[in-house]
Length: 107
Image 1 (cartoon, rainbow, N blue to C red):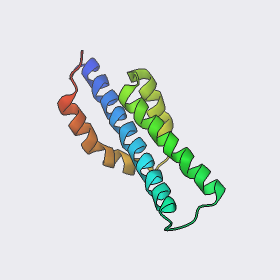
Image 2: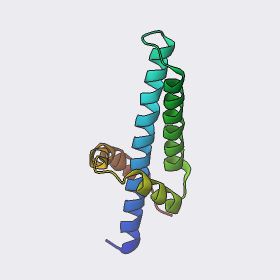
Image 3: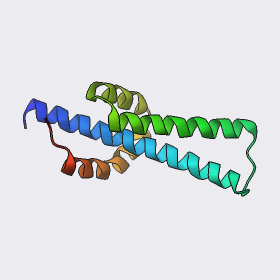
């Protein structure tokens, strides 16, 4: 495989990683917000603030994964994957990578 194709595969994997992390953060915060709104439990003001911040960061990561340039996206993914627990997210994002690989065509 050529160096350019390896870079595109790596960039595509990082894109799928950001999409996965962003979606999980957005969905988790949305579920908590909906449950609090429906009256399942009470959130203090700081809980609403934290939940809103997680929701916004998730939307931002998802947006960078979809619309970001390869260099910016790789930087964001590198910053988001510094913990050892990121290996679990790598495994979860692999199916997303395989789906994106079917539809992604290099220019």
